[in-house]
Length: 617
Image (cartoon, rainbow, N blue to C red; front, side):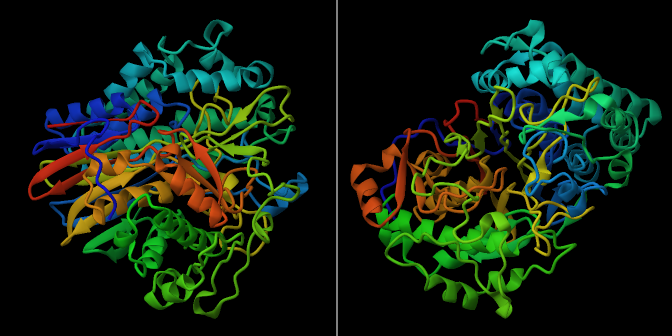
């Protein structure tokens, strides 16, 4: 299937001791340091995850969320840890209707759910790790207090919202515009307020008990029931918490102390799908994870090996199957605690066979959800018809106000409603760990982006905006409701072989996560590429489906491809009716991965973005 590239941008790492791959070298180094000190994959993942909150504040933060898929060798247990917080009790359709809103804004305070990431990391450490709290928190505290090199992307992100910070979000200006200026790329940047928050959590935890597990629980309480929750609640109740957002109007937040104190992360069974001798494990339909499995079910009826990776026929087939799977996401996915999602039927061979017949030689311009179990599909108002928001000019693929950042797949929007400044949504991180004990972890932290919500004074971090992924159309699986999880885009992956962990992988990228990671998976499993070859291979994705991010627009038939796919392939795709956007040669996706085969551990990271790295031996 296709030609396996001889050159890779870096080697596929191989060893027997341990492997860590992530979207930032500091996180990978911290995770590896924990493994070197005798920690297991879960300890390493927690340390790396907390470092990502410091070193990539434009991509995630302490008030964000994280889904985790992992395998514990000793217990022979594969599990999903849901670190996705729920909508506040006050987040009702009526509340948004009273504000005259038909979409949940993508910035400000209205879109905040309960922060889930910190609680999830604490649960992973307590239940599956071996290290004490201090052993995993010290890395993050050190970087927040002493500083870390400012990435060009962070500097650019801060510059894009500097006017907003100065005019409307002074607490953010205090942290991210030291001395009134945008920090220069490469400069040493510290966040003393965040360091103090982490340190106080650790101090209170150690003062509460000498017992490891009790310290971790005390840290959770400090965040969700103690000073962190109290500070957040006090800020949201204050006069200064009516803040400007992407609508161009100021709004107050809905999150309360009661929402935070009542929430707990949860352990769940993974959704699984068998493909080519592997069992792929994903989150349930509160995330978009099942769409990965739906694509595999559809593609199982095509001879992808004969087409060849990177060919026009391959790209067309994968893209058209993605459109069908993502259409079902729009119609059927939501929090299964609130809605009956027909997952079994969506992944069934009969359903896939029926849907597969819709794949035509030409690119489809429609959004076509299926009718599992004979149910009639309904779509949110923003996704009616082909999916563009009202007034979007779909004849011009670049017309919508929110454009995808080709390096991340997340939206970058310019909104005139915010006094002369640019609004940029955030992005996401990813990390994978494999240890010598047979454990494996895949996690996709996100949310709490510095660009999208004001810093909580005194804490050094901001709330998330994940509620923007709810729809305000009544009666749908993803309709907003108090206590409900938004249908997110966060989608780590883990594959088993003969019930043993074989591969952990994932990527930032919003709606593109389960497209870019799928390409990596197919390159590895069908084409026989090693991890680094599969990551480096030219990438593509469809922008056809409605975005999960405000303002929820779609770009029907639009297909983004890296220029490396070649002119002949691009022209063939255009003849098939795709509106092809040719992107820079190394711009689409940031997949990382670890694997275990025949007693050897492997790892690879992405050169795109120039910050991901793998470490191991």
